Length: 252
Ligand SMILES: [Mg+2]
Image (cartoon, rainbow, N blue to C red; front, side, top):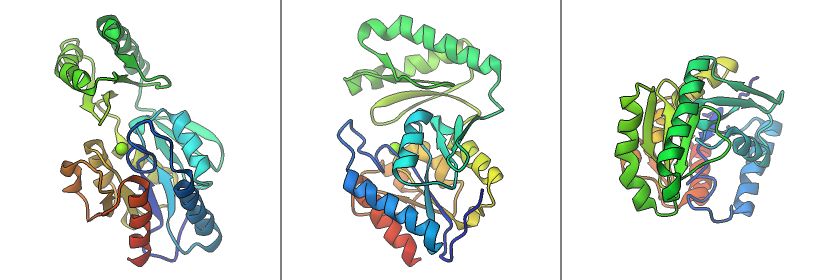
């Protein structure tokens, strides 16, 4: 699997929520998304611009669907914060081989414990994850309030989780798997040169992306903390910001 452009960058690795799709559950801006697809079609035909792939905490089935929407037919995308790679060129899903059966048992046990403790309060586990537990509640302040005790509960049992908060979710991810390990696997499977890659993200979990590439950018809606890691912050929100960043990269 390979891709090289005649521009300064070969690959842009883009987060989904808060970047290509709204952070909320609002509809996706399909006309803007179609411009991302057009960008990728031209990249494949003309090799004059970077290809855009995805790196998201979302379940890999959601990421696969987005990968097909944006017409990335070449380079793997990353789901579940590094747990999965999906290679669109060959239609292959691959879980990180550093995830053992013992890790999967800890995920299962954590899911069971958190369901027992918080289901009655209306906390729901996001469906479709394989090696992580993601929790949602319509009252984000309530969700935020229980995060410290969830982190302590999992640590007390010696389970190897990194507990973090996105805008609307609590992510309990395996400690040794993150967006950087996913991107490292992507680089190992392709001939992409990290020095010729850029990334776009909007929350602190995307620091793992910023540290893996040579140019990191944020849309205007990004968390002020992650903006500190960016070489460029677009004045536009979400996908309009991504389109602006792509124009910026074309000019680099
Ligand atoms: Mg995001």
